[in-house]
Image 1 (cartoon, rainbow, N blue to C red):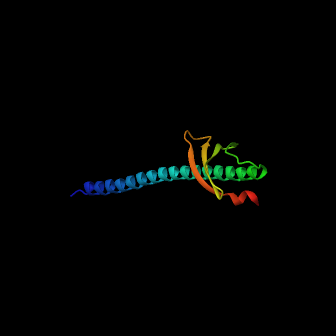
Image 2 (cartoon, rainbow, N blue to C red; image 1 turned 30 degrees about the horizontal axis):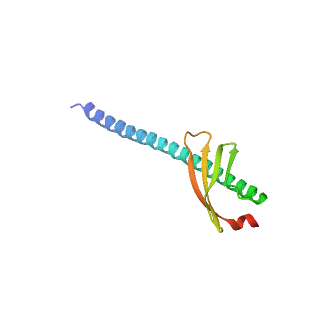
Image 3 (cartoon, one colour; image 1 turned 90 degrees about the horizontal axis):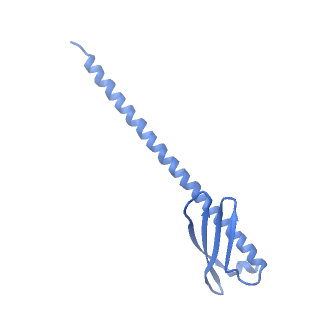
Amino acid sequence: MESSGFILLHVLFIIAILFLIVTGSIFSYRNEVYITATQVEHIQVESLFQMARLKYVEEQMEYKEILQAVSYNFPNGHVEITISHFTEAYRKLQFNIQPFNQDYAFSINHLIHNDIFHQ
């Protein structure tokens, strides 16, 4: 009685399991690369938002009249700020953020109290 067919079945089963493990690892790695790229993009957009907000506050503290629209160029993107709503207590600023390595822009609405400009 020959057992070569029995051994071949075990070898094919082990190869199939290894193939599934390698394929799953490749898909998991591709997903991690995509998630990392998305997180880096979000960090860039958040950094552009914070830099533009700080620069707007600094410039507004220098001027007496309200800055209705400003535009800033930073090393990793371009930001335009416009006032979409204004009251005596706060301003609603709209940030249009265009990172240099992206084909699309991000829009963020931000409320800022007017007290910050009188410190």
